[in-house]
Image (cartoon, rainbow, N blue to C red):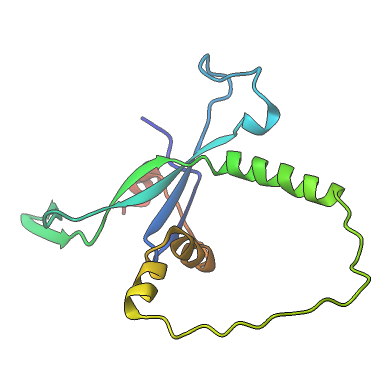
Length: 158
């Protein structure tokens, strides 16, 4: 039986779920010669929303009765490679710190621009852009979830 995730967190507004599963570093499939930043103690799976093409429900029989609960969303879990992005960003930050720019010594002429009011179509295009969606996702805080193993619940009679 696979191990339960050791950590779970959610961003409900953006419908994102992350699950961290432990990695067996003693396994023959684990690369002991990999760079240190690639040696992960856990594998993170992150959800991506799957469009609802049908209506689904989850059902359970209890004491001769069928209980149905409709599903409001379906998530597909995929490996997250954010640890690689973090390593690249860290390298870029170190390069920026190494470059020292002298402060500007003279005053410069500044130009002002006035923008016309954006149309609804332009606003819609901005809101559908990747940068806007990423900004919305980054603005929402993660909510930590409590992970309970199914066998532990059975011990307490749940």
